[in-house]
Image 1 (cartoon, rainbow, N blue to C red):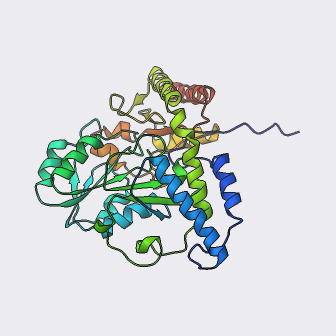
Image 2 (tube, rainbow, N blue to C red):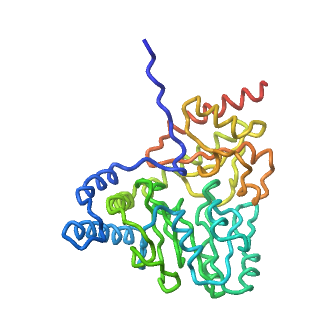
Image 3 (cartoon, one colour):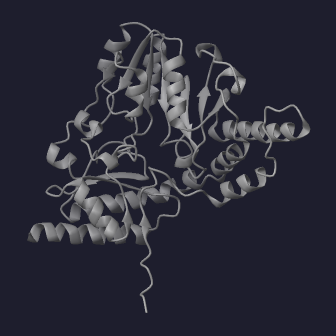
Length: 360
C-alpha cells in the first residue's frame, strides 16, 4: 500500500499566488455574462456593466481617483507606458524587473542603487537635470522585497518636470500605492486570476492612444469575468490584512536562517513583509532549489521570469552583493495562508541542508 503523499508547502507567492475563493466565485458568476463588452446589444451591455463595475471597484480598492486601463498584466502595463508616454527621455532603476529595462530601451539611463537596494537620490537628481524623462522605479523589488522611497523619488521627479512610472506588481493590494503618474498592477500577485492587470493613469493626455478598446488606449476584447475576479481579490483585503502577521513570519524566517549559518539579504533595508531573500554560501541556488523541491517546498531563486535560466541576478549585482552570496540566493515569499508551521518546516529543512554542507 502506497504511503500518502507528503503535503507540499508553497512559499513562492511573489511569483504567483493561488486564486482566492472570493475571486474564483466572482469569475464564475461573471461568466454568465459571456458576451463581448464592446457589443451594442443587450448581452454586450450586460458584460460591459460587469467590466465597468469592476473598474470602479478596483480604483476604489486601490485608492486611485483617475483612469484604469485593463491589460493582460503588469508586464503589458509597463510596456504601454514605456513605449507611449509623451516624454523625450527614459530613466530606469538598476534593480527593476528584467522586463522594464528591455521595454524602456537601450538608450535609457540607469539609476544606481546602494547596498541597501535603494535608488541613489543624488544620481537621480543628476539624471533628471538632463531633461524631462519617464522614470521607471518599482515600489517593491521582486527578488529582495526592498521597498523604494517612492515619496522622495516622486517629489524629485515632479519637481524636474518628469513623469513617474511605478511598477507595483509586488505591492498592490499589500501596501498603499505611491503618488505616481502611471502605476502597473497585476491580479495574480494578490489572489486574482492570471492574465489580467491594469495601468493606472493620472492624465490620459500624457499617453499616446492607439485606438480600439479601453478608451482607445489598448486594443483587444476585454475580459469582464477576469476583471470582476480582480476586483473581488482586492476587496477581500486578504494580503493587506495579513501583512502584520506575515511581518512576524518573516522575522522568524530571518532569525532561523541566520541561526543555521545562512545570510539574510538586505536585512537592514525596509522590506515588504511577505518576501525574504536568503542565502547559504557554498551551495548554488540551482542545487538548493532541487533539494527544497524534493523535500516538498516550492521556493525560487529570484524572479519567476528568469530563475528557470539560473543566470546571475542583476538585482544583487547592482547592490554589490558578493558573487558567492548571490549565487546561493533563495527567495521565500508568503501568502495570506502561510503559517508559522510552514516557516518552521522550511527552516528545519534549511538547517538540514546547512548541516550536510558543513559535514561534506
